[in-house]
Image 1 (cartoon, rainbow, N blue to C red):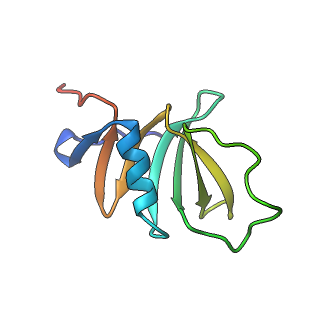
Image 2 (cartoon, rainbow, N blue to C red; image 1 turned 30 degrees about the vertical axis):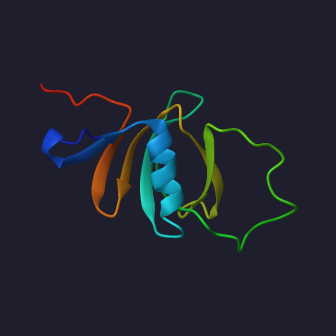
Length: 105
């Protein structure tokens, strides 16, 4: 079940371009991402960038600015995070709200 984070726990609010930059700056370190999948489900993922061990073929056949390819630790496979539906990250223990407004209620 999706759990709300108290506003005191949110350390930053960033736009999707800054979120993409933060993800790529991890360079192999673990981080968590929350986003909405195509079917409308909320997805939580522990992941990292920079994993090359399980690559097959010659790389991505497409290049979309709104997708970030990461390695999903639990699924042990590559997944794409859609930056348009990404709403939260946890990087270095800090919760980061992506393009959102903190609920004051």
